[in-house]
Image (cartoon, rainbow, N blue to C red; front, side, top):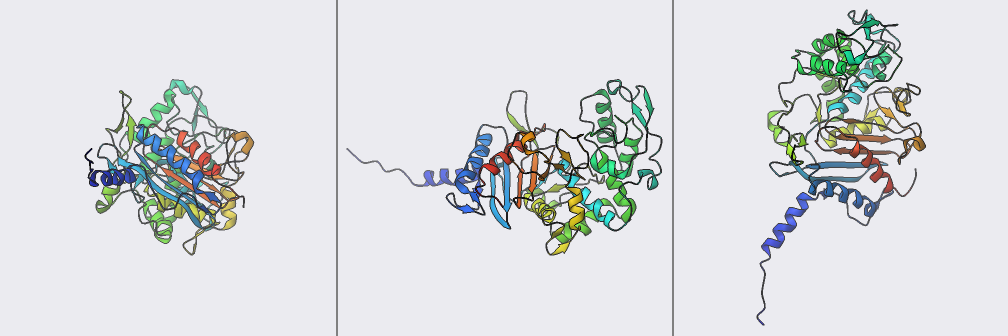
Length: 412
C-alpha cells in the first residue's frame, strides 16, 4: 500500500489560529505561582473559551495579580466578532461604571486637601442643590405627584448612592424618563447633565435608601468646582499620568483607535453580533462620573494596585491609608443588598451571606458593557475581567471570583 504524506502547512496554520482564538497566557500550566494552581486556573480559561466558541462573548482579557506577582494574564477570542480580529492584552474597552471608583478616588484626594467635609450639604458648593422634590409614585413618571425632600443632600450621600437619585436603569416610568433626559438628550458639559438631573424628582428621601444612581456625575462637577480644572484634566494630571495609565481617558486618540473593542449583543436570531449603535470614541466633552472612561486591563490594574497598596502606586502617594480604609468600609448599614457599600465600591461584609467564594473586606465594581474587577486585601489579590457585551449581566462578574478563588491553594 502506498504511503500518503500530508503537508505540514495546514496543520501549522490550524495550530496558529487556535492560539489566537483560545487565548494567550503568560504562564505554564503545571506551575504554582504565588499560591495559585495553573492547572486549576486552566478551568477558568476553558470556561472563557467555551463562552467564545458558543458565541456568548466575542473575547476577553483577564488579569490576576497576587503578592506583587502577575499570576495570570491572557487575551482570548476576538476584539470584534464581525472582523474576527484577535483580542490583544492591550485592547481598549469602554469601562462604563468602572469609571465610578476612579472618580471617587479623585474626589477623595480633594477631601484630603481640605476642600469639604463629607457631611457638608452639596448646596454649600452648588447653590442649585436646594428644594428637591421626591416622587410619590415612580410609575407615574416625571409629572407624577411629589413631596418636598425631608433634608438636603450631603456629599456623603453622593458617594454612597443614598442621595435619592437614580441611574435611569430601574425600569420604572420615572427611571426611563430620567435616562432619556440625562443620557439621550444632548448635553454640552457635565454641568449641563447635572443641572438636568437635579430638575427631576428624586426616587426617595436623602439618606433613606441605597439606590444605584447618577450621583458620581455630581462628584465630577464638584471636582471641577474645587480644582478649577475639567475632570478630564484633573484625572490626567493627578492620576493617569503619575500612574502611567497611558490608555485611559474620555476619548481614544486616533492612532490608538485600532485597539478599541466595540460592544456586542445577541440579536433577535440569538446570534452574537457587533451592536448597531456604538458610543463615540472621540469628541466626547461630557466628562462624566457615572461612566465615560476608556481603559485597558493593564491600566486599570495600576489603579487597583494603588488602592490595594493603601493609596500608593508607581512610587507616588495618591491617598492616605486612612482614606483608603474609609473608602473600603461599609458606609450604608444594611441598605445595600445584604452586603456593604463604601465610598465608591461595593464591599463584601459577610461571605456566608454572599453564598460565594471570597473574603470579608473585598471591594469591587463592574461596568455596563461587562467589565469587572475585585480587590481582596486579605489575600493581597486583584482580579480583572474585561469583555464588551450588552445588556449587562453580573453572570461573568460572579464567575470571576468563583474561578479565581478555586485556584488559590494557600492563604495569606
